[in-house]
Amino acid sequence: MTVGARPARRGLTRSGREGRLGWLMVLPYVLGMLLLVTGPLIAVLGISLTQWSLLDSPRWVGARNYLRLANDPAFVRSAGVTAVFTLGILAVNISAALALASLMNTRLRGIGIFRTLVFSPVVMPVVAWALVWKFLLQPQGPVNAGLQNLGMADSNVLFNPSTALWTVIVIEVIKAVGLNAVIFLSALQGVPPELHEAARLDGATPWQAFRRITLPLISPTFFLVFIITLIGALKVFTPIFVLTGGGPADSTTTLILYMFKQGFQFFEFGYASAVAAVLFVLVLALTLAQWSLRKRLVFYED
Amino acid sequence: MRTEVLAVKPVRSARGGWHWALYLLLVLVSLPFFLPLLWLFVSAFKSSGAIFGSPFQFGAGGLRWTNFEQVFRDYPFARQYLNSVYIAALSVPITVGLAAVAGYAFARIRFPGRNAVFLLSLLAMMVPSELTAVPQFVLFSRLGLVNTHVPVILLQIFSATGAFTVFLMRQHFITLPRELEDAGRVDGLNSPGVFWYIMLPLSRPALATAAIFAVLNSWNDYFNPLIYLSRETLLTLPLALGRFTDPLGGVYWNLTLAASVLVALPVLLAFLLAQRQFIESLAASGTKG
Image (cartoon, rainbow over all chains, first blue to last red; front, side, top):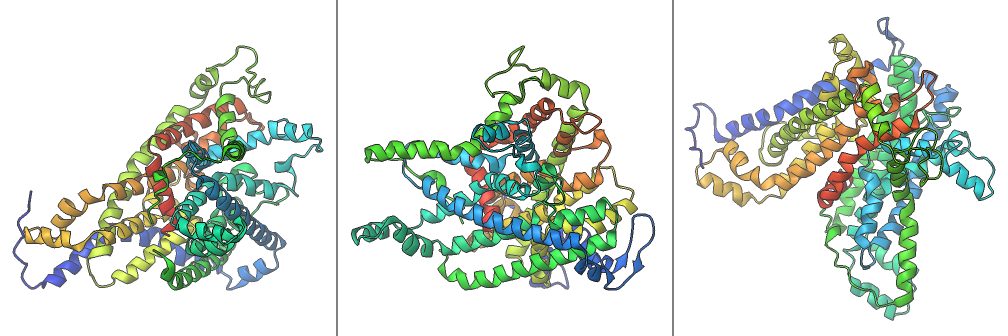
């Protein structure tokens, strides 16, 4: 079926009509975005310069919230928690993803089942996944019982301030690593097998072949996964909130959780916005670094 | 980036013993991914007394459906399930529809200010949506929309999920050959006609990718419901899963896990039926940002 071209409206050139049409098409989304994202983003920066609780009206305090941040041990602590959480996720997720991708890349009968199993936590609803683990890690639960059977002391890893953060990291990596693994897998499958064959004939060990052939060839993917996992880790809220609520003793309170507590438990809107602004600058810097570095790496892609 | 991971043809490895060692390794490695799910599904059928016992002991009464009955009988879980379903059913088509239209314009129509506006939508995609929660909350509470589903739905459509969907659709439309449009124009189609009769029918896989992504995000959304919804009958599933507790906060694990099964099952089944689409959709969210 075709629609007849309407005669050009008077006074508008073809590119003028195109321009109007373009705006018309993006307008519904863009209006909503400006109102609900871009506007609030600017507003956060403004609110961060005020003192504002739920009930009173905002009072201008200049940079005082930021000065308070610098001297707030709880904020400094949560920045540290965020750093450990982010770097921990990065290290564990990426090395596990590479290992899993190499396993998935073996040409075994039934390897698809393995891929399905490793990927299924990725589609598992976030809260359900966190709750299952919270159940498994209860003091009377199976993980603790298993650890004790192995001769370890009663170690409630999720409820102990010195182990809770790493426990959350591991749970989050098991949930998400399948995604990075299949991304690595498709990169690994782009490595020509002849190169490995040649290296083997030249007497290279598997590790040397991986280090000198595979890794350089998948480096654009590696970099991409690295940055996306890094930024993704900074955004993690729900699993931590469900598993520990930031505890015990604030040992899993990352910056996002700290912002949420200040904003929606203590209703310190100004202070919470200052925390948000710090995170915003951090994410923005990482994103810009990603884009500029990617432009240089685009060379390698395809 | 296309993920052709499902295209591997398995061939029998000829290396005998290695073969079995590798299978053993694969089984061991898959345990942490698989066991929690198995444990969840088994425990959902247990009484609260037997729940911390061995996974294969069901205790008195054996395998039981009473947890599922109780979840629906004693809690507004049916209502909460309906909330999640209708919010997804409403927000996903709008998200994908707006994104397809906007994505096409960003990809193919030149208009003044296009790059600036597109940059803003990239920003909306990258910034964690939690960061804008305070001003959004102020806005919605001024409008009297706290404890309604309106903020939850609107933020699905226009916040990070929506922005990413726009980006996904734009990247897709850029890859479609321009000759198709020219052919359509020669046949007398105007721009909306080209979009509707030529580009959109060619975009079903991309639309499916975007829709899967949007459904999962809507089904999982926790932060916004946490902020805007407190009345029990308004809750969506991710929040509802945390409400099977005694007045002191002690968790009824048998009910919590039974309810978790009901939340996870449709997603896991859909994944098993459409693995390729799911993996492609989620991998796209990983690699295209």
